[in-house]
Image (cartoon, rainbow, N blue to C red; front, side, top):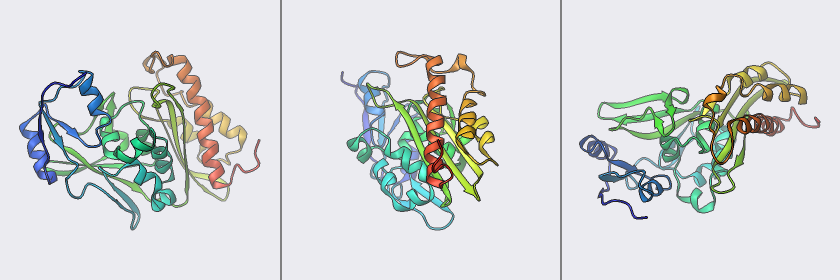
Length: 294
């Protein structure tokens, strides 16, 4: 199918892009285009204006100096997945970025587009939650910062206003944390039927901090608080990991779980437990605490 007619603008600054959004409430942002263009071709989206931010200065690149890793919204998945500092200090994000799509998608798709689009089956929201990311959003009144836990509202809905841009994402640098992302991909699209992101900080064999979150289960990425609580303060042997994973759905309303042609809500709950255990094991292997466990 062909999209409806639309106007096109390519601003050179964030401020110019924000002005266009303020003047055109029905406008859509074009970044990598992997989410927007298919919805336009299918008729699910019909913006009167596309604001192409691909040429806006300052929205690409990774600054990994100090205690914060700052990633521009237009930075590609491939850049994130292959960046040494990201792998060393925000490993869960690198693992999730590497799981996105295929080589072509990773070379063009952007981290900001993924998070701002908030597809419930995309891979990065869980990693952002597990890594305690902060979204930096800019609008007519300047910048504001939003914790990942407060950013995702629902399916395709976030805290980014109609006249705002997600400009960068900041992650605490945690070189002592091991990360993993395990997902059951849809056989037709590669999106996550269920995907679980885990970040573990271990000291003297005990889990000091745990970040665990999931994609594909609810209408937006969700933190798995019971799993985090079950892991902190423990030596994560096989029994502890299995028990923690068994609590993955405890705080989730099964009546609100995704239920579609790909998988029923009941099956997703089963997948959630299985892939939570897998992700914890992979992260635990990275810390060495699970080495040799059954």
